[in-house]
Length: 541
Image 1 (tube, rainbow, N blue to C red):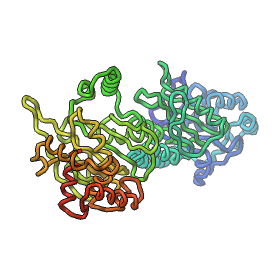
Image 2 (tube, one colour):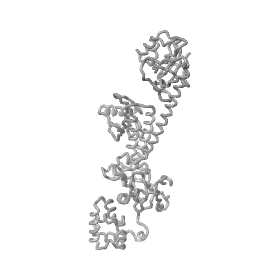
Image 3 (tube, helix red, strand yellow):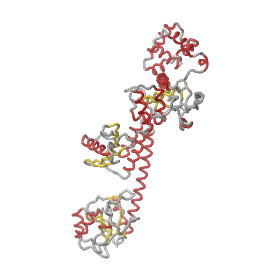
Image 4 (cartoon, rainbow, N blue to C red):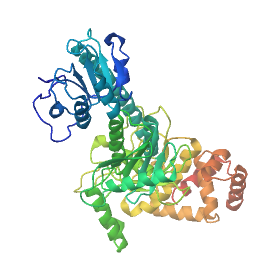
């Protein structure tokens, strides 16, 4: 009578379809043979085999009760035709045969040894002093150890991938970490097979082509596409996973060997990349599309702003990577997601800053600083690491309206940010220029975030029309480049080096321009009163 050593198995059930594998990694036959206390000896068949189960049977034909991958233990009670018996085991997918000597057979039958050699089934000799249950317990112990190793590996990989996802360039970082964990190639492809990002060893052209073809199988361009697929090319294991979000992106992997836990690690990466590559979908995307169409058809910004989720106030942010590396669309999208918006422009060309449009937060705690980060700045201030800036002033609610909390950007690790003060949708062009100035100031002072200041204090007491007229008259002799240089120089307290960094010019050029400003204005720029009046005028332009 058959007895299955695997828990929750039925001895009398016939499997008509291949069952799912056990929840533990397979055990190499060599590990079981290395247990000297068992006294097992391989006497026929190949040395390599993976054990998934242990099964004991004395039936003449145990085929109906095998699941595949078993180490079948038998004393040969009903063994009459070794060749037919081994053939049925191979047909059932058994991994190995353990034959116990005594009391039925004094030695392993020679015909059985020849049949196992001929049909490629590993044959183990089990000594009389080793009960079959002892072998089963040893296999389960090895499986438990392997499962523990797999869980530790998956946990380490999960932590490493999560850390990579928090980097300024999360998509390339996750791919690099995935390639490291799996020891192969990790590629993010479009539905048409175009490479977006890649990490790991570069494959040969044939292998790359096979990987691209496999990726097209799971690309969600048509209904019914599978979510994942696997293949082999030569000695390389290939796999492809469709990312969520409806963007048609595919994660493709190529590894020299496949280990237990690889699929789980890849699944973690798929979830992270799906979130990073398509952080905003559904209704938000529909609203953005409608706003774009209406703008192209002639609508004003004020008319389309409600489609973006709010009428304002809006904050314009300019951003650059702290390490100077360019930011692609996915990296810029991850920055926008961390700031709480999908309105990101990263397609202006190489060397240009990423622009982000941030609307008001729907909830008061949406804009709270994360642990370890500086809180939001008041306009016109720079956040320094470890400092907490005071709260910015809130705009007054209009009669009959509820005051909306303006968005307050916080520093992002790996990024340098310049932000405008909250502004109505009709003044976004001016806010864009102010955000660019704030970014230049932040880069010059090596601050993670600078927020431009609106006119306030004593300057706010002068009527805007009179202030603007005075500014135009005072600054009339200056060209736009000279006025920009003077504004930047004054904002940086007359520092030649920082102004040069902010403007991207040589410090001698700054000196020449400031000297020219003094000549044209007929003023001593070292005089604090002169500087104050010029700063007031420049703030009006």
